Length: 476
Image (tube, rainbow, N blue to C red; front, side, top):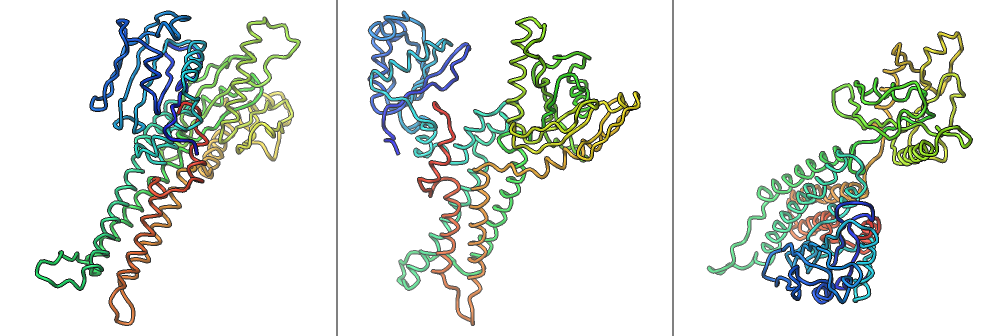
């Protein structure tokens, strides 16, 4: 593992057109490098707040002996945390540059020339975790925030970053630590009968059992919350995409399933250029998944007569559609009734696939035979197969195993802790008329404490840290 005090730097925003781009610094020697990079906005030497001061937004310009010699005195804003109160437990700076990919790259390169090194993926989050600013569940939520593609996904990921479940587990862990402290104090001072003896906590069955049962109930409540989290998987609702060739009725099918005219419907190739999403509800009125209508795949042939600009748009739409297929949890593969229905999605995705034949009413009107054992035959005009398709989608979504690594580890930790608590409660009854074994009780409770500690990161091995933070991108 790299040193946690090295001076590291990395872009915190993607190198693409925007109003601002942010570069993040942390580590030993930060103040010296910043003074080489910047002057105060009035041209005087840079003055940074001391450890006793709160975070400050500072207006600066590039130092003429550094980037200023090439880029001039560009106005730059810098958010600076002077010490332990910051998000990483040490001095941190976030430099807000004008949105320019070349400028961002030049700035990072200059920082490295002055002694910083490029941060590795997840290194900022790792330092925040090691400083006790976030727990492992919040660290994994950072990945979900970065990966979020819809407002729903971002909202759920930000909620996870707020640390609700992680804080609940840590509160229960602290509660058990206090309980073990009382039990061990009773063991240590049981024979101390002097008048000024330390008061011995009550460790009788009537006193301890309700406390253990209280923790078990709270863990059951957390488990119930996890069930709701699993339905959101990577930070949002399960994604079900409608995929297929252009102009075969995908958008009409989408509108019918979501119950509104959300997608434009025209009888021409290329009407849908980008994906559009709508919520699909189950029979109880609860949002079950996000239904996504994609642009048709393979809409422009290599030898077509379309204009160059139109071809470029079509190529981009095709690429976006294929990217969404890769992100899908369930694919509704749509086939035209007068074409071969068994178009395969093999090699494009590992998601569950439902094959659908669209617009079967047109073929029936032309007295053409349409049948398939593997496909659901649908017609928006007549309503044939729509309810069957909706039910099939809901069945596929309900069977998904979308638990994140954080959720899997959290559930395993809670299960292990609860099993130890059940054994601890049983140990309070004693056997053969003997009093409860307080030492065994303390050991079992400590097993539960360790299990919960592995969830929040209070007790954790380097193998788990590697698995969690290796999935973060650079700058996070």
